[in-house]
Amino acid sequence: MEKKKIVLPGEFLSTEEEFAAGRNTFDSDDGNVYSKIIGSVEQDNQTKEVSVKPTVDWNGLKRGVIVLGRVELVKDSAVMVTLMLEPGNPKKQILVPGSAMIPIRNVSRDYVERLKDVFKVGDIVRARVAKIMPGPTVDLETNQPDLGVVKAFCSHCRKPLHQFGPNLKCMVCGSTESRKLARAYSTK
Image (cartoon, rainbow, N blue to C red; front, side, top):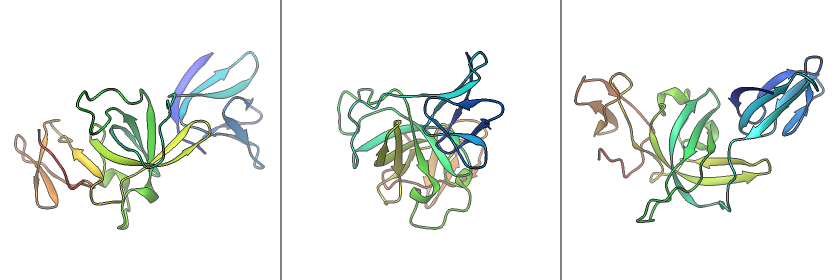
């Protein structure tokens, strides 16, 4: 088996002529195979099947729970987040060793044209579990004032950004950036 990239639900994997739909995939009326879940693509050249291996076992994660995570990937329609810490737990234990996503519709109450303008890889976000679907697929939301980026790093030099009103500024290189900030943004 050959491992491939990380995909989101509904993402194109192959045509039915190339590979048949395997685990956690579906074929559509247009003759293409798509992912059902967040995971890594696996193509079996012997059986000519494409499958998606889940990136995580969610261990009882529930709707409405507040989680912290690190932005791993920003796409046009969603942000991939690795869940890291359980807020409110003084031990800061690992909650889930895997990924979830923030669909663009769940980012803000305001119109968001480009996700790359409000999230960057490496940002630490505070989010609420909006939906858990079979697969497992977990949707997060940051569309409340207390949810969003709680710590961000400069896109140029990777140093922590400091908040100045609605914007963030790097005290090392002077870069000014914007994010979908949580009310409790921190530079610690």
